[in-house]
Amino acid sequence: MRITIFGTGYVGLVTGACFAEVGNHVVCVDVDGDKIARLNRGEVPIYEPGLEALVARNRAAGRLVFTTDAAEGVAHGRFQFIAVGTPPDEDGSADLRHVLAVAGTIAEHMEDFKVVVDKSTVPVGTADRVRETVAAGLAERGTQVPFAVVSNPEFLKEGAAVEDFMKPDRVILGTDDERSAELLRALYAPFNRNHDRLIVMDVRSAELTKYAANAMLATKISFMNELANIADRVGADIERVRIGIGSDPRIGYHFIYPGAGYGGSCFPKDVKALARTAYDVDYTPQLLQAVEDVNDRQKHYLFSRIREHFRGELAGRTFALWGLAFKPNTDDMREAASRRLMESLWEAGARVQAHDPKAMAETRRVYGERPELALVDSPEAALEGADALVILTEWNLFRSPDFETIRERLSAPVIFDGRNLYDPEILAGLGFHYYAVGRPLRA
Ligand code: NAD
Image (tube, rainbow, N blue to C red; front, side, top):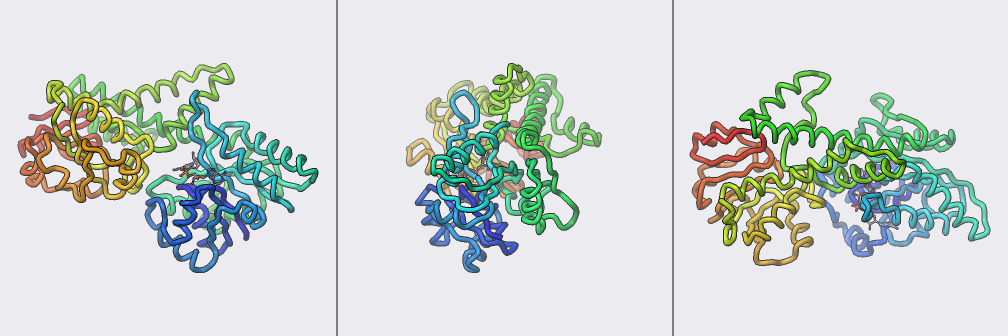
């Protein structure tokens, strides 16, 4: 089948490469000329496990093409996927500028029936706006071409995006158009062989499903962080509590890890956008507001503990940071907990020596060269002469370090662990001051 994807970010590029991998012919369109030039040189601008090989293989086979030429893109595909960014607007609502720009572009160039598929995360009612935009564009051209608009929110996780796309838990299709549903059922058939994972529903419910999923996941994290803060104050260990509650199948062990607060491009903006939607229909989203507030406070957690430990004297100190990405297996730094911490440390006059297996180029892009930030080649190099180690991302590489080396290289044996990677008893036995989230300090 012939597919066009607008947007070659985490979602668009993975979607394009995976559709090409099963034999489709895919044209990916982006307005970012640099990105397209890099892709056409065989470079993959983001890190996602397995993606580079997938892109290379399908480019070489001629099934995956990258262009900035929107007219070429629109002419190519029966399916026109919209996978562009929907960043938060000033009031927290999703900014639909890019989505509607693509709708306008499709209308400008389309000559035959198109199924416009919205993969971007967008508020309820956006499919209507896309439909209106395409219709207005066609009317402006004085022409009539049939088209359908389908909501197909994406549920892939960064860090496992290829795997998630190839073996989805579910594919949500929001449409009341029988023909489009059948076309998309055929398109997704290669990813739907083990059992039927397609869930077809009305457009508004599909649009809301995406926000509901992310808000639920964010709620689980904020809930655990709230409990961790209570555990801290009553001398309980949140990790034992986690295991205790996870054993109830109604609760389960998934996604109930306390930590330094959620980040990334999705949870923060989607919780805000859903809350905005609620306010817009005169409903006060108390729970969503609390989820966001708890997360905001949690992103300050490690800094508070650091400040307390050093009695407010942070100026001139150096901190080793392990992990910059908002989670492991990605280079994405959007809303990462590391950013808030680094910025607080810098404001207090401290320096940071950081290592991340994949996100250092992105960190350099975000912060540029500055004396208060050294990006170093190994976790060990980050420790050299630092006053403490701070862990922000649970990369596998950091899970079982040589604690002797850590102690030798740091100027004092102090660890602030925002991901609860180690056993507090063992670390206390080794002479560390080990601060974890929601776990009593064993000295
Ligand atoms: P991204 O920022 O990585 O990529 C968006 C791309 O769209 C950029 O390359 C940008 O240049 C391009 N673009 C902007 N306007 C364009 C236009 N008019 N024509 C063509 N290209 C254009 O974004 P992302 O992380 O891939 O997210 C895309 C959407 O998918 C968002 O709505 C997001 O909420 C949603 N989503 C993201 C994830 C995720 O894990 N990143 C998961 C599920 C859903």
